Amino acid sequence: MMPKSFLFFVLISVLVSCKTSNKDTPPPEIQTSEGALMIENILQNSNGMVGKINIMGYFVAPFYNGELKENGSFQILLPNHFDQMTGRAFEAYNSSPIADYELHYSTALESFPDADGLSFKEKEARLAFAGKYYRFEVTGANTSSYIYPASSENFVRFVVGTKDAAPETGYHYYYIYAKEPFSIHGATTTDNLFEDGTEQIYKRTDAYNLNINKGWNLIRYEINGLSESSKGTEKISKSVVSNLGINTKPERWFISSK
Image (cartoon, rainbow, N blue to C red; front, side):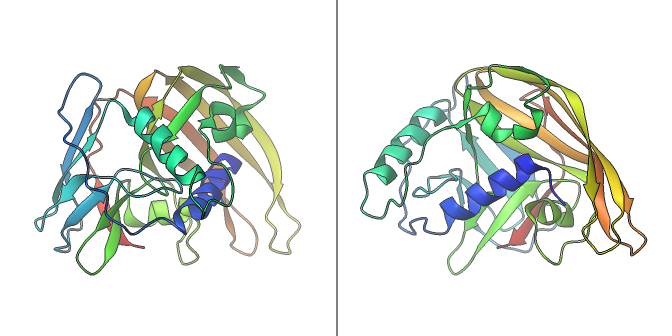
C-alpha cells in the first residue's frame, strides 16, 4: 500500500510518539525572521475544535508554536533554529530514564531508501521532520486531533495505513528541515505481488524529483496511479516525490481525530 520510505517513517512515528510526554512545554518567545516559516490557512472541514499546535514529532516532549481557532483558521510558526530544537529534544530524551534507544537525526538515505540506486547526492545529509505522521498535532482541552495539507481527508489516512482508509490517488504535503542539502532524481520500477491470493503481479514506479536546500523545505508526495487485481485489491502503481518552493501555500487543509 505504501512505499518503503513511507513505511519506514510510519514505523518511526509510531515508535517515537507512543510515549511522548503529555507535559506541556511552554515555547520560548520566537520572532519571525529570515529562515523562519509562517504557515496560515483555514481548514476545509472545521468542526469547531480549538487548541495549541505541536510542531515537534519523534519521541520527544511536545513544543507548541501554533494555534487553531474555532472558525478553522490557524497559524503555525516553524522557527529557523528547528534543527537546534530537535537536537536538544533528542539529548533530553536520550538522557532520560525512559529512553529505550538512542534518537538521532535521520539521513536522507534512511528517509528515502528506495532511491538508493538513483542519482542521489549527499545521502548522509541530516534532516528533521516537523509534526507527526506527516501531520501537526492539535491539543485541546479534552481531546486531540491532527491537521494536514492534502487532496482529501482520506488520502493521508491511506498513506499512513489506517485500516478503514480506501486506496485513492491524490497528494499530501509535509515539511522537513535539512541540516545539509541533498538531491534525488530518477525513477525505480519494481514487480510486486498483490498478496491477496491471486498470485498476480503488478508493476510499481516511484519517481523522485527532489532538490533539498539547507533549512525549511516543502515536500509533495503524490499517488497518480493504482493497479487492481482480479479480486478488486488496489495497490499503488505510480508515485512521485518532489519539492516545491518553500513559500508555496497548500490550499486544502483538513482535520482528523487520532
